[in-house]
Length: 57
Image (cartoon, rainbow, N blue to C red; front, side, top):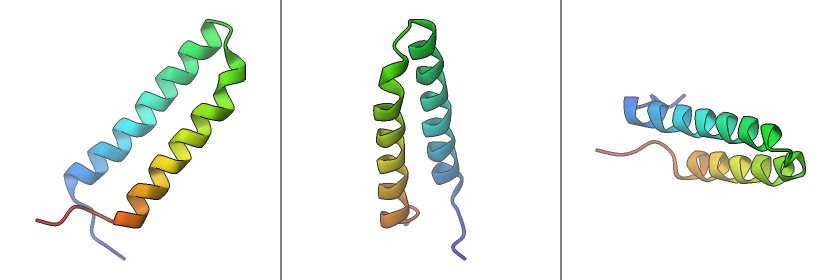
């Protein structure tokens, strides 16, 4: 298993937090139909990070 850099962990955490906040804001404003697109964007971002792997120093 690959060792994770602190920056990689912070970036992945930031993606999750930003996605959660935007989902809550969409729901509060009555734009719940946008949530599947938000989930797809988050999934694509996570897949791209997994494909390119952790940062190299």
